[in-house]
Structures are given as structure tokens and as C-alpha cells.
Amino acid sequence: MQRRKFIQTTILGTGSVYLSASDLFAGVNGEKYPQLKKHKITKVERVKYDYHWPRFVGKNARKGNHGQYHKSEAFKLYTDQGAMGWALGSNKIEDQELHHLEGQLVSELISPEKGMRSDLSPFVDLALHDLMGVILQKPVYKLLGAKGTKNTPIYSGMIYFDELEPEDNPAGMDKILENCQWDIDYGYQQLKVKIGRSGMWYPHDEGIKKDIEVVKLIQKTFPDITLLVDSNDKYTLQDTIDFLEGIGDIPLLWVEEPFTENYEDGKKLRQWMDQNGFKDTLYADGEFKPDHDLCMKMGQEGIMNAYLPDIRSFGFTRWRNLMPQLKEYKMLASPHSFGSMLKTHYNVHIAAACGNVVTIEGVTCISDDIDFGDYKIANGEIQVSDQPGFGMKLLK
Image 1 (cartoon, one colour):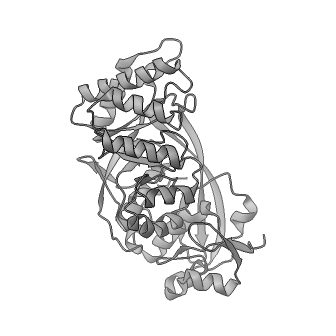
Image 2: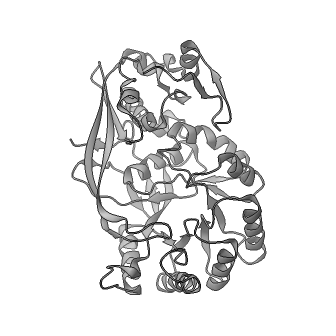
């Protein structure tokens, strides 16, 4: 496959320009590291693996049941010196582009200071960072400067519309409390509660009423737990205000994806929250197909307070290079993790490397095919691994 002639000139992706191979390599600057120059990628593999969540995960405002047992794929990168790095892969990258890495020196692809080379797919970014850490025998967060802290708050992202399951005999509200208790026993002290029942699964007014009832019940049952809410873009501005008025003085860490990002409604929501008891509640958005420039404008003006694009599809390098701008805007970060505990652990390294991560989305997973490493949750925080790379192993 020919290298792409047009690559993004900035991390924000606002323009394109032709760069020669020497320009690309100079931008990566991996040649400063003799060990990276010694390793040439000889083989790239796609590997399928199985994993499951500890319980069945039901509906949210946008989608039906998410299930429990899943398959995914990883990318394994081998070098001629016997090193191997791996990470969560994606079926959105073709084999031809993936195998384009073969025959290239690692120093031509990535460096600790710059991250991955600009013309490469974000879906190989994580595997390249793991490989770099394995070769240099350092955890990723230390290669990136270790400017954050080793322990970061973490929340469970798995409190869904659990009262509706199973469909043939709905369990009701007790099932929600049971799932909250499981997550608290696991070590979480923050719970993100899915709302937005008015979008698909309930009549409009009944759905908002049920969202309010659920949040009030969880807070009453677990008063020491910090709550976040996420309506997956299925509320309107007025729905969001009605919900917040309905829960009264219950504190929330954030309100996530209340509606598709737009400047006018976002500004009105932030103003209403500031004036009605939710000044300390963050407006968090940017997860689903974000308009990046719009989100940055809203962040710069103090409207949007936390930015959430996915750690895999947005790109690990893009995330790490964006952080100084977010800090300048006083905008916090929390890269989206849902689906896989692998993504949770990648985000622990972003937090430990860069700081500015308000909390991390925890996705509890179980797998016979993966050793998820020595990341520990204690007192509501997750501790980064000090093993080389991301510190996880693929057991197949």
C-alpha cells in the first residue's frame, strides 16, 4: 500500500499537506533511541479473543441490549529482535494497511516524545505504544513523562436500564440496586447511571420520571457514592433541565451527552446549571462522532467542561498531544472506554502520563485469553501498572 500523501498538519485535523518520508521520520524523532532503531517489524497478526462482562448489560437510551459475551480482535507486532507488542485492534483497518508496517524500523514509526507517525491509522497506535514500551523496558506512562499521578478516580460505566431485563420477566428496580452493589463491592466509588428512557423505551414523560426515580433511589440507597449520568444524546435541553430539577439537590459529577453537541443549547444548559444548584457539575461530551472544533470552542468558553472521545478511534497519540490545549482551556479529559477493560487500562496511562483526567471509565471484563495486568482498584481509584508497555498479556 502506498503511503498516504495527505496527512493532518495538526492534532486537531483541520488541514492537509504533502510531506516526504524524511519529513515524516523527522517528525517522529524515534532515531534518538538506539534500541528503537535496532528493531524492524517483521510480522503483524490479527488475533481473535473472547471476553465477557460480569453480568448481562441491557439497554441504554440509544441501543438495545448490549449482552454479556463478546469477541474482539487484537493486533500483534513482531520485530526481528524478538520483541512483541500488542493491543486492541479494529476491523475498520484493512489488512493491506496493517501489513504496511512490516519491514519498517520502529524508530520510523513512533517515539516517546511525539507518539505515532502522522500518516498511520489510529487503530495501530496502541499496539505501537505497547511495542515501544516493551523494547525500551518502561511502562508507557513513564515514556510519556509521568506528569500525572499513579492513581486516578474510576467509575463503573455499567448501570443501564436494568429494570427492563429480562424482557419476558422484568426484574424491576431491585435489579438496578443489585448491580450497583456488585460494582461497589468490586471497588468502584463512582457509578455512571444511564438515563434517557424517554428516547426509545418509555413514553416521553414516563421515561423522564423513571430516570429521576432511578437516580433518587440509587442516591438514597448508596449515599456515599458519587453519581454521574449519561443520556446518550436522547434528551433535549428542556428534558435535561426537567431531569435536573427533578433530582433536586442530588450532587452529580457530570451530565454526559445530554443532546447532540450544539453551541446554543450547550451554552443555555451551562448557564442554567450555574444558576440552579449545579455549578460544580461538569457538562461532559464529545464521545459520539464529535465535531472537534465545536467542542474546543465550547471548552475554551467554559461551556463544555470534560471531553470524551474514544481512546482507540480518536487515537492514543492524538489524545496525549491534545492534553496541553485542554489544560489551557481548563477543560478536563476522560477518554471513552466502554466495551473493554483494555481501553480502561490504556486510559490509566494517559492519566498517569499527562494528568488532567477527571475520572476513568471502568469496564470490568473477564477473559481466559487476556491477562489484564496488575492494575489495582482501591478507595475508588485505579493504579497504573509499572510493567513494560501497557503491562498486559495476550494468552493466545
